[in-house]
Length: 116
Image: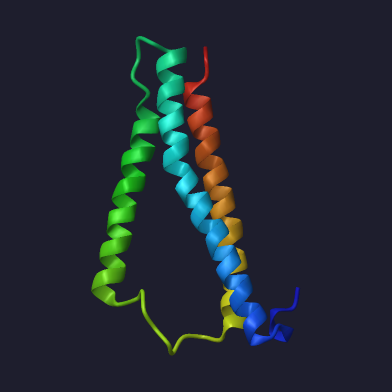
């Protein structure tokens, strides 16, 4: 896919759509952790599922750190960044990495809370 040949508007639209997909993927992690905690209580009633709790608290900690980073560095705002076509190429790579990471987390959550 040639991002260099995209128009400005098409590149911006692509980046916004893929960003929304990445956001939804990242938001699925705490939802999956809460579901895994409930599944762990049902499948293993006498034990505490440590992995889902670590994933949930780790996600919350990373969210707070990201908000603090963007607030203190001003990285949340900028008009002098690269062209949307360059960002479109980068965000495609970020989508692939986010998808792999989220699938790995969900697989780990399922594996650690399934019935023995």
